[in-house]
Image (cartoon, rainbow, N blue to C red):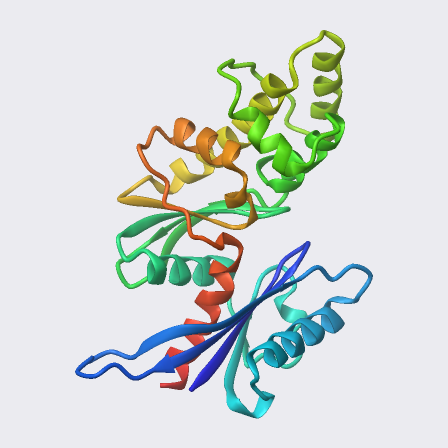
Length: 269
C-alpha cells in the first residue's frame, strides 16, 4: 500500500510517498519512504505547484496515481491541494513525522521560511500543545535570509560564518526591516561578518526558544523544517534552549510531509 503526504509551505512543496512493507512477525505495520521530492513553485499557482510536484514524485518513483490509496496535505497552502483526501495542521503532521523518526522525541521545533513553532508531543506522535509565531517572520528562515543578503552571503555561507564567532551581540529589532538597518549599522562600524551572522541567528533562536518554552521543553528535542540545514542556527538554538543535543533529521524539511503520509496510512487501516 502506498500513501502520500504533501507539505505546501510558503516557499516550497514537499512530497513524500510512503510504502507499507511486510516484516515477518511484526505486530504493527512497517513503512519505508519510497520517494521524497521537493519543488520550488516559482511563478506557479499553489494548485498547479501541488499537481506538478505530485506528478514529478510519482514519475520518479515509478508509481501511478491509481496506486496511491490516500493523499493527506499540510502546510499554509494545504487547502489548495484539490486532490488531497484530507488536510491536517502543521502541528499534527510535524509531531507525527518527528516521533516516527525519533521515538524518544517529546519536543518538536519546526522552523521554516515564514513560520516557527514549538510542539509538545506524546509517545504516539500526537501533538498535545503548541505555540507559534505565524504573524511575524522574525523567528523564521526568511529573517535569516534577508540578513544574509544584507551581508552579501549565501545562506550556507551565512550559517557557516556564524560558527566562526564567539561574540554575543544583542539585536533589539523585532521587525525584519528595522533589523536590516541594525545590520547595516554594524557593517558600517566594521563589525566582522561572522559576528553579525551569529548575532542574527542568536536572535532568531532566542525568539524560537521563547515559543518552545511556552509549551515546555521535555524529553528529547528534534528540529524539523528548512532551518535545520543551517548549522549556525542549530548551534544557536542549542545554546538558547540550554540543551546538550538537538536531534536533526537528514532531511528536516520533509518531516511534516512524512507525518501526513503516515497519518494517511493509519486512516486507511
